[in-house]
Amino acid sequence: RLGIVGTSLGGLVGGVVAGAEPRFRSACLLLSGGGLVDAFADHPRAAPVVRALALIGVTTDRLKAVLAPVDPLTYADRLKAKRLLLVAASRDDVVPPAAAR
Image (cartoon, rainbow, N blue to C red; front, side, top):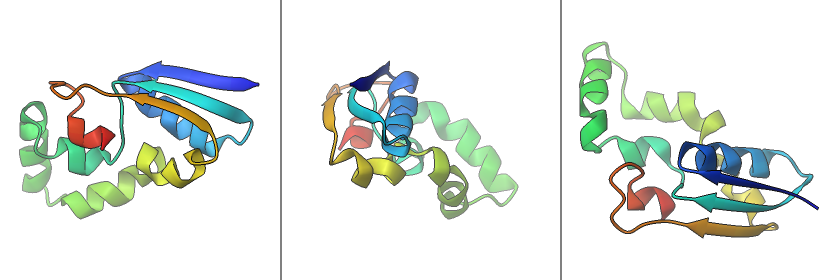
């Protein structure tokens, strides 16, 4: 009967935990999502970081590989068997709506 609830960053972590830990039966993820690199690479707040990483040769493909173990999308197939509530905002300026899609 174990479940997890998380909002924003807590929702990202909750998605990983619920997917990785089989004892979690349900998850409620609020203002969260997955596909971190794709969702945030074009985010205005991430632009300085993306530019700095590009200067040292870090590509988005490399970032995806490095962040895959902590990306909720990696565990999405495992969440299909669980009770999941994902609440997202269509105009969230922190977690882009694309992350929830």
